[in-house]
Image 1 (cartoon, each protein chain N blue to C red):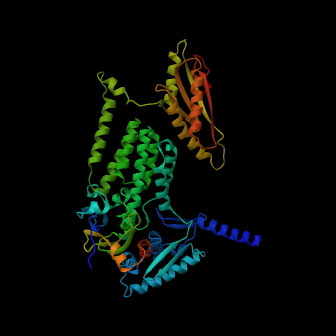
Image 2: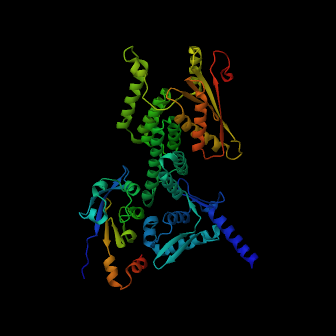
Image 3: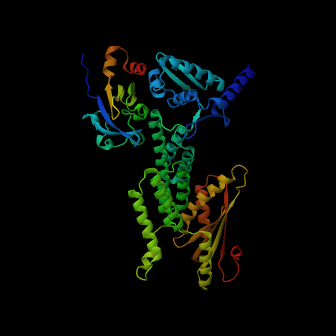
Length: 420
Length: 130
């Protein structure tokens, strides 16, 4: 008896495992995958039956009367007997579903006057997954910002193009397409706002560059990209992006200027003018940056220049300047190394931001090491900062990774090996 | 027999088309005068908004536009049952779009009609009907 119940349990488990692994993609190209392998026969991929299946999946677990299906899918078919046609198509679709999924994970039933596609538990649909992840991210409290960012990014990665992008235009697809597209763009803007608040300019650029591969005509994203590049001082890249945007705009709409393009052009010109025609008067206001909290992040080349400048101006006294090195530890894992390095980058940015003083500077020397420059630290002060960094990192770190922190005083001799 | 129509209301939308006359979305242009009483949502908040934005930004269990907006297309007519658990109220939702440009969505409260037809426990009846 016990063996029998074990056997039933095992069968149940096998069925559950099989069910869990059915994944339906609707955002971008349509596919149904079992264990990461498509189960749609190649010969049927562009058939009417697949279109009918896509329609049923869109309205899954909903009662559909045949007239509505005909109206949406085959209004122009010219069939003399559309009701008979739909019965035939649904019969063939049921056969196809049985071939693909013998355990009836997707099953079309007919009840009274309507058809319904019943979807078993454990089937994942990318569009629903995206919606779920966004809702979960929205629920995250402010102190779990890292989690929220992670969830938003996961959701964004699921959107690979318009809902059932292979169809140019189908009236019934308009509302569902518009719904997921707007959800995607809204999430991108939400994430940009978070990055802006935390001064994560590089992340904004990376996010928008990814997004415009999917939505190349989304003007609002491209204008934010140009604006961010300007803020980063990447004038040439900003100009190139602007010209490409203007060109696309002309090709697509046949007009050379929109209000937003004019606005960007004005910003670009102001910026270029500001850079090229510097007069002694007003130099200070041009050089001064916006007031921002926390330490300043530089790229490694600027960091090297500033380090050497510190070294030259260093004076003997009670206070000393320190060079700090934070290294990622315990991250070597064949499968998760990339994930851990990404996590380190996010975690250390936040840790450094909340642990260092306004005048301190830092740089990502490589993927797994961060350099810090502390100016005018009293005896023992570096230990307090080290302890603070470690504590704040541990507070937000949820990964099995660790960091190693070392501080060395900046001397007027060749002691910092890294810059030799 | 006459029934109260306090909770019946409507919404009127105008369709948006692209340059090549493809349907893109709807904009809410009118609601019945009792809209706020019937739904507790201020029409001022919604008027002028695109349907997709309303669906994404405004959740209201009576309107439940997420449930219906896939069916809101030009030149269509649809009719649905709609049970609102929080209000214990049953509606018929009718979507009319005889012409390309406009769509009318009418919510008719049929809770009393259903209750008077069958002398069953109200909650059970509503559940069965739904």
